Image (cartoon, rainbow, N blue to C red; front, side, top):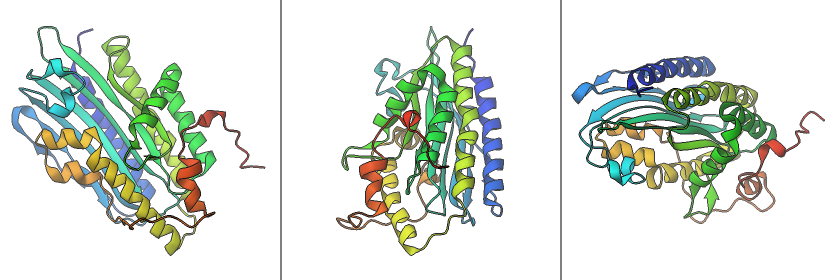
Length: 303
């Protein structure tokens, strides 16, 4: 079947609406701002941002559709043969920065590119990942169980790609416990690839909501909050120095407020900081964020 961006665009907008509604229900107080920003050549941006809620300190759920005469460099660095050709692109991306340090931060995005050559070139990409500040095996197991359900036999390869991508080489640290990540996806043709992308979109809320609800009322104090803000610094470093989505947004001329809406509202950088030896904070990177087969872990939390 010939690729068509219209159903993908409609699905991403509908998914955005559902995720926004679910996150508003989780927070219970604050609501997302809602903007409709048209652009040249039929472009449309729908920024959705929630701030300063009792349970969600900041969340951004963004939809974009764009077209133009040439793809930004960030979109062609892996496919240089597509440079200088007319394109259409649509995407949904989101980030949730909870207030409680025991609730993990999460990120997800889905995207579709269509290059209007004599023989159309198209591909899907995206995924979702989880960034805990305090690690719980039962949460990671649940997250990866949903990731496997979303991607089936492709899960091992996409999990590995996620572990490799969400990595800070200058720190030699993983950003979180990963999830799934895919690029340049055309497997089985357009309909099959679109169905695969929808499966990932449909599994995001079932993966994240139970973890949020399980941890949101966990008591915490200044120590946990301070460590959360310190670890958010790693998140900001990744987004600004490594993330291809941030680079693409800047290069494509999108409004900078929308591009950088994924950054956390508060962050701390402490010079040469090391958590106390033997503390749960010290074990996060050393023991919990090391890539592993989460689905091989035996959950003894109920014993």
